[in-house]
Length: 190
Image 1 (cartoon, rainbow, N blue to C red):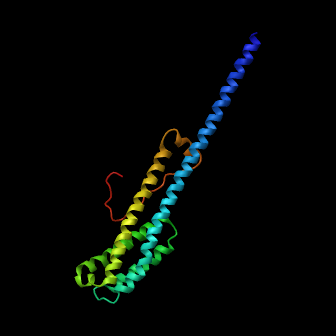
Image 2 (image 1 turned 60 degrees about the horizontal axis):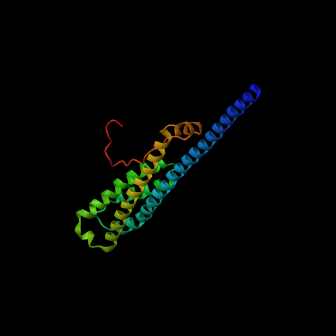
């Protein structure tokens, strides 16, 4: 009888270990798939940011062509905007695109300030329409950057939480960077 009890105890232990291993594999697979989904959400959201920047980039030749005949717009500014547009399109990384976008935003702000300083430019419909279009695009970019940062926050939080960080570290999931605009002041202590 004791051999039978020993065999049953061994079977229970083996069964428990087997169930534990299956549970661990299922949990690991589920966590891995969740992390992959969060990474894809980040990549998808960055693509939306790029789409809106591309819209802005596509507006620039029209803006430059429309305003270059007006003396109030310094030709160096227009050349700089055109050069930055080309630089953005040739950027090899997200970081380069962000840096170029920040420079481009500063140059475009200069054009918009000139536009606002000379009221008769506002009466020129083509200039006015392009400025409105740029401002609308800026709003879209802001929304998409916010959504991108939200996706990054969700992902970064997940890879740092216990026990998901075990899977994240085991499979090489790394922290992603937030989109940081050059126009915002730095936060102390970060």
